[in-house]
Amino acid sequence: MSETHHSKALILGSGPAGYTAAIYAARASMEPILVKGLQPGGQLTITTEVENYPGFAEAVQGPDLMIAMTEQAKNVGTIMFDDTIIEADLSKRPFVLKGDSGTKYTGDTLIICTGASARWLGLKSEKKYMGFGVSACATCDGFFFREKAVAVIGGGNTAVEEAIYLTNHASKVTLIHRRNELRAEKILQKRALENPKIQILWDSVLDEVLGDSNPPGVSGIRVKNVKTGDTSELKLDGVFIAIGHNPNTELFQGQVKMDNENYILTKPGTTQTNVPGVFAAGDVQDKIFRQAVTAAGTGCMAALEVEKFIAEFAATIKAAE
Ligand code: FAD
Ligand code: NAP
Image 1 (spheres, rainbow, N blue to C red):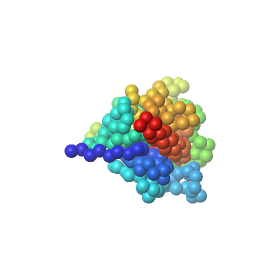
Image 2 (cartoon, rainbow, N blue to C red; image 1 turned 60 degrees about the vertical axis):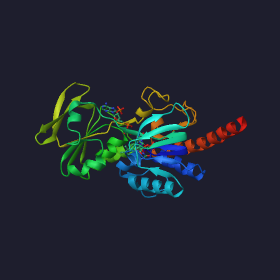
Image 3 (spheres, rainbow, N blue to C red; image 1 turned 90 degrees about the vertical axis):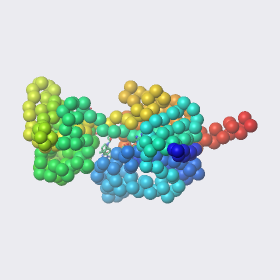
Image 4 (cartoon, rainbow, N blue to C red; image 1 turned 135 degrees about the horizontal axis):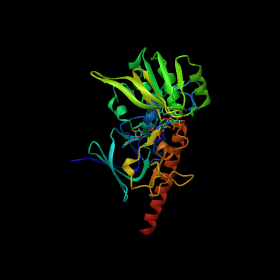
């Protein structure tokens, strides 16, 4: 028979938002349950140096920062599960989440901190060579391209950081951006522009990934200039797609209000969704800042709002008795 675990404060996701919510909820004696999901530690586990999370004079490694957050949440009393939620019912309280393991998790309140996942271009050839030279994670796969030529698609912080990181392994990195100006922070732009291994192809998009079938692998790419329409081919071994992220909100489609890009809508200045008792924190509800520190900040807000919600809920029940 499947198990059921109940908490006053159920937290979904183990990125900076989830762990911060857990730390605050545990310290408020709410005995939170946190379900970690497929990416324990969240997005920062796939990066290297984090230079802008306060408290570290020397850059901290993303995975190390997330281990520290896990330990902190555990030490203050968070109950954690290595499970991924595949079904959610928010139609009545307690809210019910069903895990991939068959376990059920119920909560008087729910804090959704499911973050975001890499966006893909949607090319058939991109899908065909995924794992065979096409990747969305330089820190995971960069090692396979030692002394080889690679391309990175995108112009934001992720793309520029990935391009810089890849120069540790690859012989040459071509950064391909659809405009003639990078979106990334100035400090990262400067580092990329000064790096002799990085070449930037402006006003260009990836038109097709070219490759071999036997054995399967990327052999090059076709690139299109968006201003002239001209196409050209580059010989290389790997392509890293870094064009942003989509919020992980599929589970809650039709159950909580979202915007047209599927980010969960919260009442301004709060983490409250349109469902009383359901809160959302971190990248899942933030398409503007999307930083570890803002995710942690909204995680804190959510836990404080949960505490208030539970106190008011208890008072309503008492008054009705
Ligand atoms: P995430 O970190 O996205 O975590 C989401 C969590 O939800 C994961 O644990 C996942 O397993 C869980 N989850 C999802 N679906 C389910 C489910 N169905 N069931 C259970 N759990 C689920 N920000 C900075 O401030 N500084 C940086 O230097 C920086 N570098 C970055 C480098 C890269 C390569 C990337 C991709 C991002 C970087 N960011 C950086 C952004 C930062 O990582 C995010 O803003 C932050 O991680 C968001 O935290 P979060 O808690 O909202 O969600
Ligand atoms: P992002 O900031 O949304 O940038 C996405 C980039 O991809 C943009 O340059 C965009 O071009 C391009 N792009 C989007 N769709 C495309 C398409 N279909 N074809 C070609 N190019 C496309 O995403 P991100 O870089 O992943 O960053 C996400 C968040 O995490 C940001 O808030 C970022 O600050 C944060 N982050 C922070 C750090 C750090 O602080 N060091 C590191 C990584 C990420 P346009 O510019 O033309 O829109």
